[in-house]
Image (cartoon, rainbow over all chains, first blue to last red; front, side, top):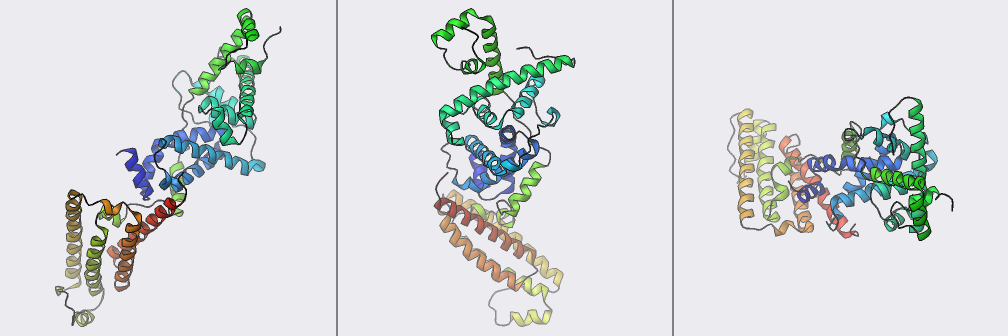
Length: 186
Length: 223
């Protein structure tokens, strides 16, 4: 069944069609909200909220953009809005790397795990920008729209975030060297 | 000139260096190495994998979607093929006729023989006189199956004639569904315990809600 047929059936409320869309895009939705949230428990809530919003808005999807792009934008907005709402209640403790359910390519697991840990530990403003730019491929103009900041601010946050990431990853290397763990050479 | 600071190096990951920065990089191995490390880091970030949602995520989501009425199982309505049937008003009319007969038959099977006979008096509908409740239910089931089969054939014929345009406008669909809901409700009132009629009513109501939602959304701004 084509994606447009699936979408049409999902618009009609067909549970099987919605499930098929979920199966197809849940990892992408979960990945972006997980990285923005920096927390597993919050990420699940945000992902659920993103899906609810998307299914509600589905009849308005006209196909001007790809469905994946449309859904991705809804997921990003849902996560960002949820964070703003929950800012005061937000948990700041970073999860242990083992809590991140990643499906990496063999051989890249250690590096990817370190990147995920470092992303989680970034200050929130920096994390949002580096995720949207370096992970998700947004432009600074798009980030400005989504976050409500000037493109120049987005750039400045990005450069700080990259530098901070580099610093944290170097520190992780040193820590793991001290504990006899394999080191990611740069 | 001292070493380039980390934020400048981070900028140079994807921006062209100023002439003096380029001059420095040409001479400074430490800064060049650091810039390469930042570029590698950025490339790796761009290829991070998707993440699997936690186990059971769909079940939680499904419960929420159901509670908001955003999804439903393909009920009797869809199984009958009504969701895609063209020529809505004609189908609605056919169903109303059918419901009249079925509800009447169901009512007969759930009442006593005397009530049944009393109800038959003066009714022009050619309903076969059942000899027992089991036989009557069997007749009813056969009638339902015949109806479903006839409807499937009808859909095929209408599809061949290319008369699907009527379904394109959700307002037409909604109008027909209103008609069907009223007829189904009347049928269920006559035979409140009949599973087929209740299933059809529930499916029709759900379909009407979905169509109404579609109309409301179309009236809002497009995303």
